[in-house]
Length: 85
Picture (tube, rainbow, N blue to C red):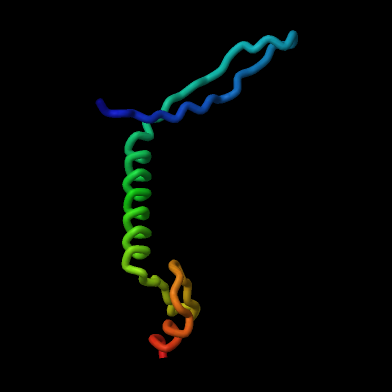
């Protein structure tokens, strides 16, 4: 059995002078594919995290445009500095 996801926001209706609600518009949007993609991304991130932790490696990114570095896992900073020289 597959699961379907929907988003169902409502658009406000109006009110009569006496305060009675006289209308509301509901619409439903199938967001199943988006939810499946989010789930696959989450699973991929979990595998990535577990793999880097098990291998005891650090991961970093170097942005050439700004010359900055970002670290995604713990790594000995002195070792990294030696590797980058």
